Image 1: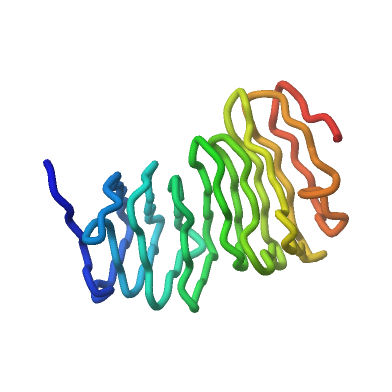
Image 2: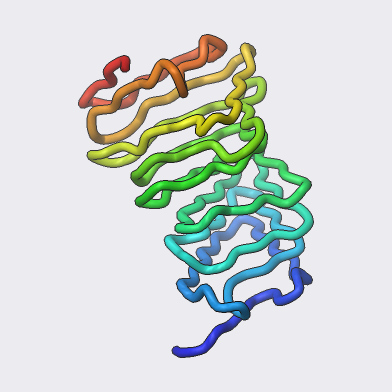
Length: 193
């Protein structure tokens, strides 16, 4: 239908997903279109997806993805995170084209889809027992620092290569000497680059 619609105009709606899944998508970029939430909470094996979109997505106060849950971000625009961020579950930046990964602490950061996935301004951290997975299809996305900082704990961290097509491990960007475990789950192989 025509026209613009905004869910949560004024950032006054809390989005809670408990053991369910929700996919949100919009292609309208008008002033009154998109999604605006005060808080987002995904728990108990829940899944939230912001799908291929050029629309407006906003979270004003906090976002929390628990250790059993997944947040898939396939936005064609940058996701702006609120001041309070808890990413204990999988956060997957899976747009088919280039994306910016907002600086935050990610217990399980995954990149898939396609294009270049570039770190946003600030420091992106993989904490103790955290995971960084580089996935994708026949043409896997590439990871870029963009002049920003990527820190990895030296305690129990894991680096995974899991694309379906051949991958190149970029020593200058994703390959931190702090990773304790490296898993190659790619039948087409991974080349050091």
